Figure 1 (tube, rainbow, N blue to C red):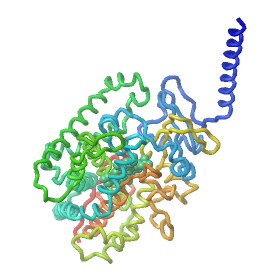
Figure 2 (cartoon, rainbow, N blue to C red):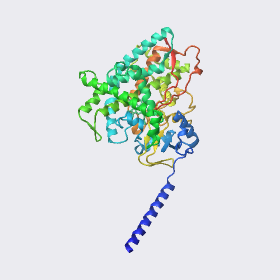
Figure 3 (cartoon, rainbow, N blue to C red):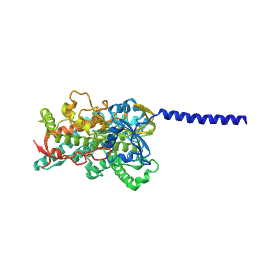
Figure 4 (cartoon, protein in one colour):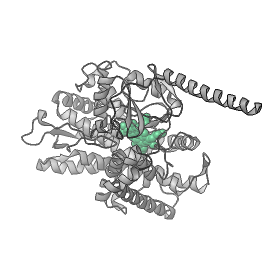
Length: 497
Ligand code: HEM
């Protein structure tokens, strides 16, 4: 009897202390401010078609760290250079994992890629292979002949349009330039020769990116959302997109298994070698699915981002003839007599480099970077960032922060004269490639593709707006997706020198 009384007493004491401790903990932890929530949907209705813009407006009202509920998922968004520094540098290790999302799961063969893999030993090792073997300077230099070939094709087709004074669709051409380069570098073939005819291939990348960037109910309602995704057709679209990309990778791999060994080594050869050597990454044997996941990653991450940057840069330049003339003079004074400007030579183009940075400030291709997931609680500005929260950095808002940038809405490359700021993740006011452990591993490759494309097209042609169009008529709206392109294609008339 005495024993059970003691037990009861102990139990009550334990329950009271747990309640007390919880109360104490709650009063000590303070979530960031944010807009009021509705039942069930939380703040989803406030996101709109272009979430980075809606979140930027909300940050102006609620501050640089905001808390929202997207469906049932707690989400925190930071929107200034200092709060980005806290996330990407000070507390990077607490939050460098990725959430499990429906779209990324399917397109990454269950997170066997680099971009969507959670933070674990597999990711550390596969990323290391990417950095050392796939995205390094030597590899980019070995891609130069491919870039020359693709650029010559574009110059020829633009010369024809110039002679008939017809506008060319630069948005499309930039995409086929980067797709051509990445496809050849990865698979050793032009995409015209693959199972996917070039039309389907051209559609496939933007479609997959749209799926990744689109509203998927499963991502906001973890247990029941899949029902809604079937209803809206997103599930079917995702399956089709994944099936076509899979077929494409299968064809590429089978072709490589048959080819002679002494031919040029491409990304598939390298990944097949890992499979053959039975390499173990993390605790997992490297198999066909790992190869396909990484290849799809490269296609999705590498093609669109560089093409979008070139499209926005040409858009901004054609709205401002002073800047256009200035950048062309720099290029032509140095390399006017060259058929094609080389990758190395683009290093000498200081003003072009500023134009590209200014383009990334106002139009970062991936404005919210890729969502992170908090694994260990931490604090920013006295606010608690709890475990299992989704975390986004609004690079688009940061590029327009009036405390970081003078006249933030004006496109002015000269702001980088005498400035050390670069886009490599050390300056938190300019984050087109993100930062911290998850920073884009292919900054050099991405930058070189952009510099090379712009330098050559600006060198070889003058660019005119289509008949009857004025600079102020140019449409600047953005199209929704994981990467943010110009909504209306950029049409310009090339003029041969
Ligand atoms: C101008 C071109 C490019 C831009 C602006 C860009 C931008 C980005 C951004 C913003 C991220 C997310 C960073 C974060 O979450 O903090 C990222 C990640 C990534 N990018 Fe790029 N990228 C470009 C080119 C490329 C290219 C050419 C490749 C590959 C060939 C590539 C491969 C990747 C991969 C694999 C990741 C995932 C990294 C990880 O999660 O560990 N990117 N990129």
